[in-house]
Image 1 (cartoon, rainbow, N blue to C red):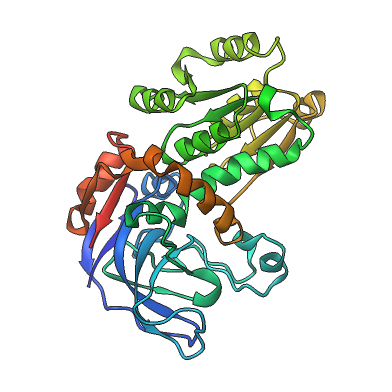
Image 2: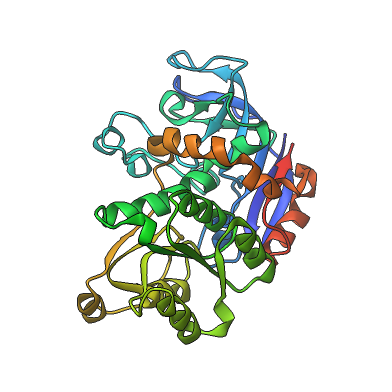
Length: 348
């Protein structure tokens, strides 16, 4: 089969690989229908996140079950499925407590420990507790967003709000830092709560315009943090934002989040970070900021994220403007790396 292989920083290739087989009787094999490029993959692609080479890329994918292990109970050959970007056992402490992204047996698709879905076929371990039968309520195109980016954007907003449960959302100000696909999903999720306002931060004009069309107030990162702080404080009586969601995964973005949030405000970071936290303990103490960060437990929050996407499918249609054959993946990575497009979906 054809597959997209990571060969090193800014190097991927299309190679022939064996069709995967059931290795464990809880596995399923799927014929991939759609597989998308995610912004978090750029951390590896750009060399920001050190990684071994030689594995199949891709952690956003959908497909049809073509083989199922003997112990698989909830899925059968012919079922259409979507898989969260990490596997989970469904039985450990974390899986039982709505924290599937921290399953003790979890593996990340499209990494050195588990081949991903940018291929004609892929293997899904622990299928009963990992893969999800495709709901009929959303389109085949929108389904691939439920592997990662829509639940992750939703999780960023949900996590921030849960840190300050007594705040009046209708009078609150949100800031979303990063207007790539995950950031747009976070903006959609925040706007759905009907807050007073949502600011969107980026330095790519096309992304800022998309955020504006959805109803957010654009702030250009290149204007500098002082100007952004002034705009946010002018809109909040001098306080700063009640909720800030950081999606980028780079220290300058996280520091900007800290600068824009008000004292006793809430920050949620869902970007993939590899550096130190860019503020001191003294800074945090002086601001009484409430802060959470980390990977989205897609399997745990799938139903509630899906319920929102059902209502917002038209808002994400623009993400399917660039559907291309898997054979063109090398060029697709280059386009995505240069931020020429919002999203790329490959079809094997």
